[in-house]
Image (cartoon, rainbow over all chains, first blue to last red; front, side, top):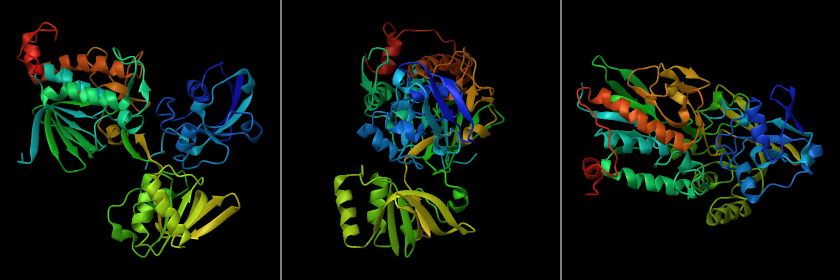
Length: 110
Length: 342
């Protein structure tokens, strides 16, 4: 199965994904720039992505814990999600997300 | 040398789990440590990012939270009397003529140590900077991530962004001083203390502050002097006259001054060897998440192993004449005396 990730320059990357992997792990393992400093614990909010409109309704909604962490994403939009909280399943084959500026590994800190 | 210097065997930079365990391993070999950390308490990521999150891969603990692990480590290293210096960032590590190191902090302290151990994880925790174009130019003049002097906000048009305790506390504290105050948050749910949320809502009801559900997306102004903040809301963009902006999105890690210390780096990680965990500078070691070597895994338990081997190598620098006999805590009365258990 695959996910399509648009990077911060607008370039699309089709990435091989595996069932049970977190979307954050797929992005990171293919070498795209994502800070994800807590490693997937829903504790840092530095792995946020924008989920394509057509896909946002097909995902299970964020937990209250994830919503709370999304409060600390400075460029959060209504379609923002933490990519460490989206687990790959067959249903998500073809998922399209865009990396958001605040999840870059550099320049996120003042 | 001036009288304000602190002389010690080892300066440990970073009070996360690996820095704390380094105190233990160094202590067993009779080395005295001073530990410096930018946070206000020990624990590093374990304390700042996930104090309540369970960790499942610490040997001997099927489950332990970040805070519990920190507390147990503090208990374990207590016999060695390390001195902690919190709320400080190490700014410089310079080699002196006699081979020791001068370590300086942003609190103007000077430590002289025979060995420096960098256990700084992902670097130092810094406020998250919103990715708003040109925000850097306003920082320190109109954009602030903390309050040093409340007077800086008197008679200002203040915009505060965030929904946690910092955002709410400063909204409540600065409202009486500010000319106007707009609180901006992405949703109408606040994770701050309920009492603060109620007080904030009362101010909104009284017309003393404005609450906007949305996000700051653009800044307007000149020469670092802010004039307007553009907010994005469900109803479209709106402009708020503003002379001060305070974003409160929590902390994130930044390598910071470590990159200026003349160490070989690879992808912002410090390159070390796997026998001594020494950097490209003799006498400067790096352990835990901040180092890299072939096969490196960013695990707390790997950092513990690295601390043990580092301590053996550090001992040869601190006490070059002393012959070190490898001993076990289970059988060595000497070690047990150091631990205060016999």
